[in-house]
Length: 138
Ligand SMILES: [Ca+2]
Ligand SMILES: [Ca+2]
Image (spheres, protein in one colour):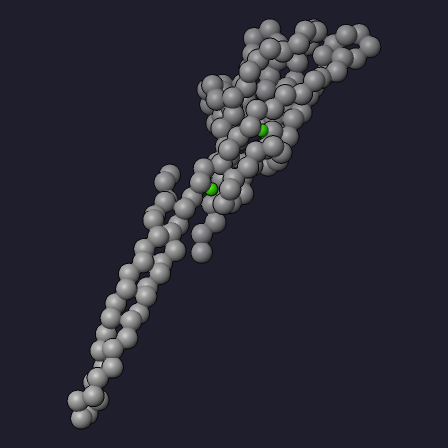
């Protein structure tokens, strides 16, 4: 959604005249500020996981919006969606065969990788996520 509009500035001159014909002229400047809405900026994240004593990879959670920003607003953490997510998950779950499942917390926006049982490797999945700003007007 694009909500940009440039600033407007206009100048009017008007004249007043009294009952006996004397006049005075002055100027009005109308200055309307522009409404610039910059999109949020998502920055890549990475995090190392751990293994238990049996070598099983443990669940890893990352606060993916901590290094993201929006120059003129705040990030709507509920808007985070995984690109290429499982059908029907509304962008909140992605299953990687042989590795595990990525999920988005709908409130905090954190993304968690849960290794499947028996998975002991490192995930090499690159999860692209999409986010939006929390729009506040007025
Ligand atoms: Ca913005
Ligand atoms: Ca990030």
